[in-house]
Amino acid sequence: MDPAPVSLLTADEPAPPGVVEAGATFDAVFETHYLPVLRLAVLLVGNQETAEDLVAEAYARVFVKWRRGGVTDVEAYLRRTVVNAVKNTWRHRAVGRRVERLVTQATFDADPRALETIVIERDELLTALSALPPGQRQCVVLRYYQDLSEAQTAALLGIAIGTVKSQTAKGLARLAALMEER
Image (cartoon, rainbow, N blue to C red):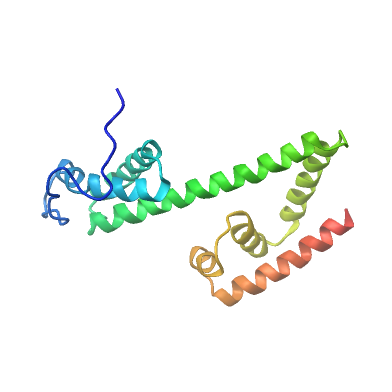
């Protein structure tokens, strides 16, 4: 039996207040925040089944931190965890679509060695990436493979945005030179 779809705009009964009292059980946290967080996830992904999976993952992550006392604002932490999970889902889908296009293109290409060429180019790129200094490699991978902004990359690496820009530029220039050598 499929679960009943979540109402996106209204609950069947009035939602409890968003604040959970200090010392509350995780069951109370779950009951208080589940429907609003699920509604958010459904609106973001457009699919209740995927949204339920993302919310379950979010609760699992929150529970670990909550149990240690590391979560002061459960609602905000859940919301941020769900949004991050949705962004990761979008990224994975986008990468999957790109790979699918490349493989499909290569499969139907008149040259039967097209797929082999893609694999060889990928291996050459990985070899060239491994030849970059760690700072340049991290910036290039985070900016272009993970598709992070300069600010996100800087925050993640704990460096200035200007450093991200210069390391990325140097890394791309070095990659181009290494790929041209091959």
